[in-house]
Length: 401
Image 1: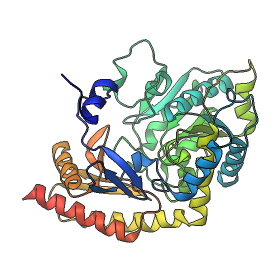
Image 2 (image 1 turned 90 degrees about the vertical axis):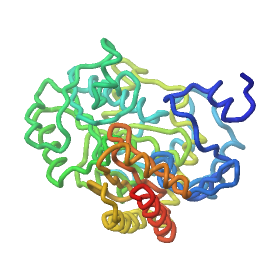
Image 3 (image 1 turned 180 degrees about the horizontal axis):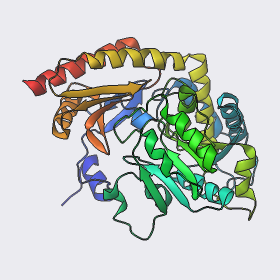
Image 4 (image 1 turned 60 degrees about the vertical axis):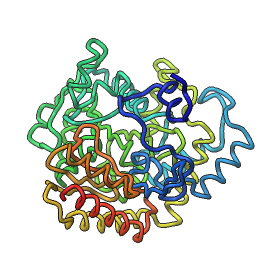
């Protein structure tokens, strides 16, 4: 077989994560739009799964990256050199974070960040057991996989994983299983891959109280919800609950690889002592990614994107609830993190493919493929939201015909 097209070479030389062939060759991206190699324009309503929160190639982010690249990209393993982009970004994050969470430990990916947070909990508490939740997704490295809320994914790797108790998400009565043997509870404030599941208003406060009573650390996995996705800088602020640690990634780098733990300085210091170098990383807090992240935070502030997120999210949630489609089972969400649950995964896939044929990029969720995700950039306009709903309605009419 001769590899001629870029798609052929992609399948031949790039390691795949699924047996499904690629369907969209991206040539460029701008704002809320993707442009394929054949010139077709697509409205991007997933943002790389909550990554490009200020849209693709925002001029301010691009300019910050160009300026940083012209100075230096990488000089030494994380922590050895003082690099201004890291310092300024950490200071900015601390300035908008929940009270008391004032220090950032930079990493590279969300999974690595969750691994590091679990290690930090063990060092702090001396305990070895954890609590996670059914249908949770925290990444695929060994520590994060230990807290993966699907046995189908975990059971392929026996012997690698930590001792984790899995509780039903949103069930306050089940929190009694948390006792003084638990090092930490790892939870998404809003479950993403589980199907955009939003807890009731009393649930996270009850979880906070249970952690306080048992001495377990509360870790919010805000890899998807962080940096404005729920209409606040962090979902912790949206729900009025301050955890002991927040793990961050995705939208943190505005499209560039960046992650981190946000916690009190005295807690973060456990990585530097008992012994030192308890968790190190070559590319964590890469200065180019930090420059992009800082620029994106400035865009969110100056363009009032938290308010735009709330306004467009409320409008989209209402419009989605009024779509005339017999197969819609539920519509739910918060901010610009919205799920439309179909009666079955096959119907959801048909709607997704029909929407793509009309120029709208939407997707399902890893652990609930019947739920269609809507997570556009935070600077999505009302006109673009109107167009998305029109495409979605046409796709559903096509499937229902």
